[in-house]
Every structure is written in structure tokens, then in C-alpha cells.
Image (cartoon, rainbow, N blue to C red; front, top):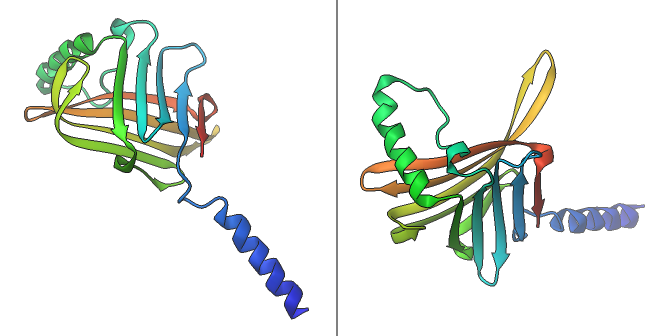
Length: 172
């Protein structure tokens, strides 16, 4: 009996190891049903290639999420100028070692230094992807938040997008 329990314990631990957080991410994608903005992250050789696609052009691209006040108008205008420069497709290559899974629902990549994000000279580029849940009287809603962050001078900008979980896939 003890031997059977021990074998069962070993098999359970082995199966848990196969779902370990240490397994490398191969790809991640979020694409809305009616395509608007997509985030795609794919492992190619020793790099993760990020593609952010604005399927309907930059005029319909998300460039801010948060509270808007008169004080944010200057920031919003600068962000609009950057978005137009970045264009409908933003591609960036992260080194594999600069990306990690903090847990099963959070992926982060970050690079610093003199970098190019499309035509923009930036000080840093980061990607943050995570899942959240909100409960209401109508049920539980799960959302995947994807956000590309970059710094120009002393200002931080980002390209945010929220997706229903069903619009996303992750391959480990």
C-alpha cells in the first residue's frame, strides 16, 4: 500500500512538472473577433518577436486607457503624434532572456538602452500581459490586458489593449 502511494505521488509530481512555470513560452496572441488591434508574440531562434497590428489604421488604434483631464491633453497629443509615426504595424525584437513568465497569467518583456521602436528613438521598451477577473451580479468576466510601453526622454507612453480571454491563445 505504501509503495502504491509513493508511486502515485511520484507520478503526480512528474505530471505537475510538465506544467511547470519554467516551461518556455513559444507564442502568445490576442486578436479581437472583429479585428481592431492584435498583439502577437512569437519565439524565433533566441528572440521573441512582438507584432502589434492596428488593422484599421492608427486613427482607430488604442493609445490611452485611464482618466482624462485637462492636464493630460498635452500628453495625449504627444501620444497621438507617436502613434502616427509608429504606423499600423509595430514590430520589436526582445531577447529571449529579457522575457519571463512571472506566473501562469503574467508575461513580461523589457529592454533598456538606446533602442529603436519603428522610427522612434526610445530609452526602453517593455511588454506587459496579464489576466484579470471582475465579478458582478451578471457573472465573472475574465480579461487579458496587453500593453506595450516605451520611454522617450522623460515621458512614458504605451499602447494598451484589453481582450476577452476567448480572443487569446498561449502556447508553452
